[in-house]
Length: 257
Ligand code: NAD
Image 1 (tube, helix red, strand yellow):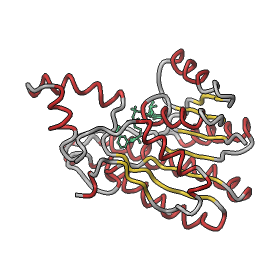
Image 2 (spheres, rainbow, N blue to C red):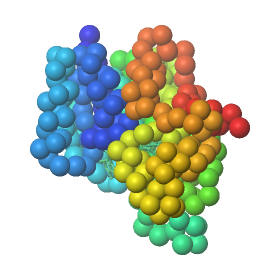
Image 3 (cartoon, protein in one colour):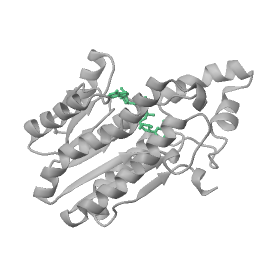
């Protein structure tokens, strides 16, 4: 039977690949995120090719009342949310003493608090129906730190704690809660930085990838968005029913060091 899957921040990158992965299985999708309206509509339509229905909700993940409306819309359209994927996230790089206060608040809101707001809306029906999957897209930065990414690292460590707590609260209700911890993933966002970084440092684009971006990723290769989606699909499957309160790293060996 088709599941209903909510993926926050799914107009681009990892979230979009996760939405496409579930859509390929014929699931119903609720997509979310910013972008060009015509492009989002084209994405929405393409997600219906395998027979599921897809709707778009433009909730801003910094706004709890808009998140509540997203979740209420999903439940009203499809009955309940079977799989919740908390993926929306942004980054800002600066030293702590120079970190803009509003950027700190925004990153904590999008990368951490939004997952609390979606979860508190989704959990009652999951508990009642005794099934559900919550998948939080964290990061290698949920496990380890890098300098100049204070808000991101704090939010990603926070979502690891939220994942474990929710898993314990839901363990007896057939609902699993897990995190995925990717290393460097080649999303459009990352790709766009390569030519500029090459120019700025006077090195080749290949060197930017291997010496700058993939410095800490032992495989010296990016993770593909489809590979992250495959982990999400596995965590949502019946085979993963005993996996809860933990994370799966997909980081080319980064956090083994
Ligand atoms: P991306 O920029 O390609 O996609 C981010 C998505 O979030 C977009 O759809 C965007 O519109 C949406 N978004 C941003 N702010 C929003 C807001 N206020 N409300 C609603 N939606 C909003 O980025 P990505 O690389 O695909 O990242 C997705 C997730 O994966 C993030 O949580 C990120 O931290 C995590 N992650 C990314 C990498 C990487 O290397 N790209 C590595 C580890 C973890």
